[in-house]
Each structure stands twice: as structure tokens, then as C-alpha cells.
Amino acid sequence: MNRTRRLRKTENIRRLVRENRLTVDELIYPLFIEEGTNIETEIVSMPGIKRWSLDRISKELDEVVALDIPAVLLFGIPSKKDEIGSETWNDNGIMQNAIRFIKKNYPSLYVITDVCFCEYTSHGHCGVIHDNDVDNDATLLNIAKQVISHAKAGADMVAPSGMMDGMIATIREALDNTGFYDLPIMSYAVKYASAYYGPFRDAADSAPTFGDRRTYQMDSSNRDEALREATFDDQEGADILMVKPALAYLDIIRDVKNNFDRPVACYNVSGEYAMIKAAAEKGWIDGDRVMMESLLSMKRAGADIIITYFAKDVAKLLLKR
Image (cartoon, rainbow, N blue to C red; front, top):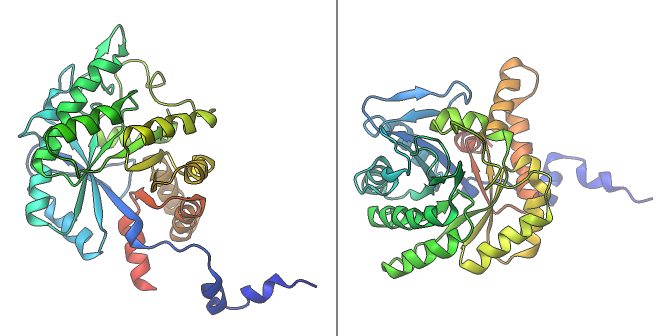
């Protein structure tokens, strides 16, 4: 008789034969940085996550560094918005000032910037609006200005999230033409129009004022289309391919891992985080165990990098082991 239980008998043997392990090295922690002063505002739908102004954020960054989390993903929340999101390429904007602040005061942190417009536009969509829809090519012109401004401020990596056709080629050309040959791109290559983003829109003040984002983000029903999207970004020069969301799209993470010879990232999004936190608060689940099991499922599916609001919680739990 085959007795597979022999290798499950004790914790030590389970450790020895364990196929996947979650470590802090794979984690990126998102940060919401708001223009202004004396801001430390907890996001009600995301317990434990806050908006910070730069004069208060050192408390958060000190903890991130102490926990040895290697990278942060920045989302800027400006004090003013307009129809085209022009604050995204303001060299003295909230994102640019945040990059400079972190690189000066926390040089060990790897700083990745979200490249999009939804937090900066008065309408909440991810680009320039023509005829009640995002104009792809007009938006690309502004994306080029945005990434150059982030690069000049000192970003270590840019992460375009708007799902515009041709965005990676536009960004790579803009960076190369301004001398930023070595600045990598982590593309939101496969980003679905998902209901799991709900709490993020509270965090980033980015809900659209009309319509939705289904004309540019992917239909949740589609699997083959994900490979087409990832193929275009791979060919255009993306250094890392991301799948977003993660937990309901583990099959897509595995597809991308199997088909591309690049690091694969996934985004453990706000709704995934909020559900676990809420159920744990009610006492319905063991929050730590469900958190680790969920993140391990992403690793097992093929993710090399996990962007997660749980990063600090994971790091603290791993330190206890």
C-alpha cells in the first residue's frame, strides 16, 4: 500500500517536504500618500490601512523597514484634480515628493510607483475622456509625461495600471529616450474589471463619476484574452507581468507563469484583504491562517511577487516562527 501519510506525520517532516514557502522577500506593500499635512486616516473598509501625509508617514515607513519588507508601491492622492490628471506629471506633485522623501530617508526601500490617472482625474477614469470613454492614444501621450516625471524624481520601478493598448511600448520608449534605460516596468498586464476593487476606491478616492471601466479593463469571463494581453506587454518590453486581482484568478497566474519567461506578480487586492479582515473580526475564521493560506495559493499558482496589504501582518507572523 502507498502510505503518503508517512510524510505528514510530524511538523518537522512536513517542513522538510514542503513545496512552497512564503517569505517576506516576495512582498510589496502598497502605501496611500495624500497631499496635505497631519493626515493619518484609517480606511474604514480596509482595517489597519491608512492614508498618510508625508509629515506623518515616517511612523509607517519605520515599521516597514524594521520588518525587512523590501519594496513599497506608492499611490498618490492629490489635493486638486482636473479632466486630464495633469498632477501626475507635476514634478512637485504628491507622488514625486513622496518618491524623493522615501529615497532620501529610507534608501534601503525599493520604490515602485503606480502609473495611472484615476486618482488624479475629476471624473475618476484612467485617462483622457472623449465621447464618454477613455481615449487610448491621447492617454498614452500623458502616460509618457507621467513616467518621465516619476523617473526624474528617483523611482526605482514604474507600474502602469491603466490597461491602455500600447502603454508598455510608450513607456519604454519614453524612458529610453530620456536616459532611463535601466528603469524596469512592472506591467498590470492582466487586469480585470473586478468588484474586488471596491475598498481601494475608498482608499484612493478614485471611483468613476460615471459609467465603469469595462471598456479598458478585462472581462472576468475571459481566460485566453489574458495571454494575448500578457503577450503584447512581453513583446513591448515589460520586465514583470502582473495579474490583478489574485485570489479569484489563480488559473490566470498559472497560465502566465507557464507561458512567459519573466517574473510574475499578482495583486492581492483590497476586497480580498477586507473580506478576510472582516470575517476574522467576527470570529468566523482564523484570520492569520486564512491570510497565509490565501497568499500561499498565489505562490503555488506561480506568483514570484505578491503585492499585498497583508505584508506587515505576514512579516510579523514569520518573525514569530
